[in-house]
Image (tube, rainbow, N blue to C red; front, side, top):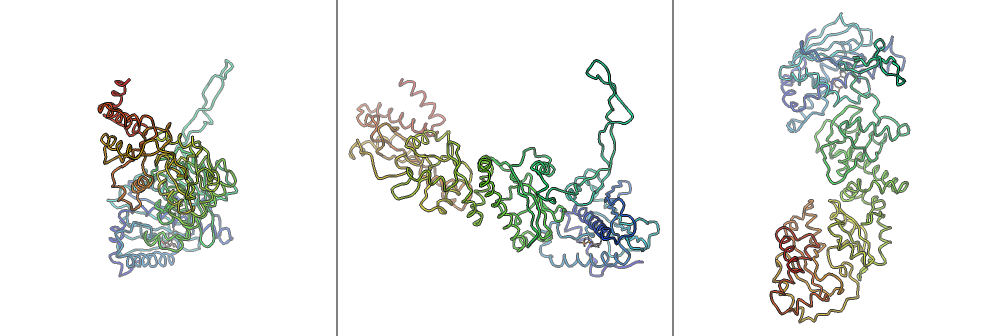
Length: 634
Ligand code: ADP
């Protein structure tokens, strides 16, 4: 028989080739999926007793013949009769493709694969495709052939007697890479690694004990013994794991199994995951998968070990934007759902209601898991907190519902390494750290080394100091201030310890207002006025004579501007600090009463440098000079 595929589709082949160019490797996924589907249908028939004879070996085989320039996908599935080829290949598949291309004319440029052009995607890489198929039904085998134009031939094939289908692709000259064994192997591993029927591609070598050859080796007692030689053996190379962990019941999996699967997914990653969440939903949508929490310290590479999206064990993509809430994009693992529309553009994906439900569900499951860990094994949760806090903080900042849940299990860590829930911490500090306006003041440091002097002072007053060193800290504490009424976060170096948490009592000033007025210009003359604002303050006489502070708000907004958040105005402000002068310190009194102008100058210089030094702000030439001057003074 000869026929014409469809008049309207005259120009479909160049279209297939051109528009799908960037992703034409998916042809292999499409053809192998079809082979797997046909095999599963056969298994279903057999299990219902509707199949005459044996199923036999159902392994799907991929063969590359570089001489004949063919790539063949073979299955022993249900096969197709002539009528079925007519119906499924000649008509339906084709109209499906044209419909598709009609519908998405305007977005063709953005379309990178994933729309199930199915069988016809073979023409992205082949200039001739043949089908040899024998149905499980008692009907003759057929041979169909088409050369990438609207004509095809179809005839009975007497030679082909075995049930199943061979799809033979005559690879086009500009697609020769698909005749390369390594390329094909990689593609199979990418798209077919977890398909549910064994897939064989070529052979592989394994080293085994020989049954016939032996070596003589020492037996450890001065004698000799025989030991089988290790010999190379060829065996069929099966490229897939037909029962991936996410398809199994969590009850049957140990922590070790999950870790093993993690390494199967990411063979190049040698880190262990922290813990995992096994998803298993069948209503109102279908979703299975395993999400792993990786160890995250300061550096995150979003392009490594990405979450992989599958549709019934067929790899689809590892761009999961829209399907997974933003803050979980840095997790690792797999998601498998037949309910995610895989064949459309990303903007559509984001507005799809199933996708929204899936995203919400994942978020809820993650909150459930974290809360369960918090409640059931607090110690373990605390051990993991430093690695997961970035997810929790980011989640709280971007997902209202998650935030409400996380307020219960989010932890604060103090500079002594103790962890507290938000409520517990508030109770702990309430008594001493409530200011005169009834705000509970949370003191924090972001660098325990650098802010050591400030931390020590705060502790000496009986205050507790938190360690908050995540890149999201400024945003996160802003959020906590909104969520927890009457809360104020202040970094320990934002003010003098008296003013960090202002109480009503103040220390009497030793210098009069006039004396302070006289002193101020003397000090201002020695510092960069654009950067430092000189402030007279009444501190304890045994506090430092001078110290540097930086306003909480100014600093926090500058930091937020750096990590994004639409506050670039603050980001552009120059760095500015306060130079606080302790008017009760004897050395400050000495400055005021020094009559030798040079000596006075030197003293001020030395005091400001000491303050800068304590703050890590004295650098380069200024530091060298300071050292030199100090030695001279001694
Ligand atoms: P889809 O798989 O999305 O239905 P395809 O164009 O890939 O679209 O295939 C069309 C139909 O052709 C399939 O639904 C199936 O009935 C039939 N078919 C394709 N490949 C095979 C095969 N290897 N064995 C049996 N039937 C097949």
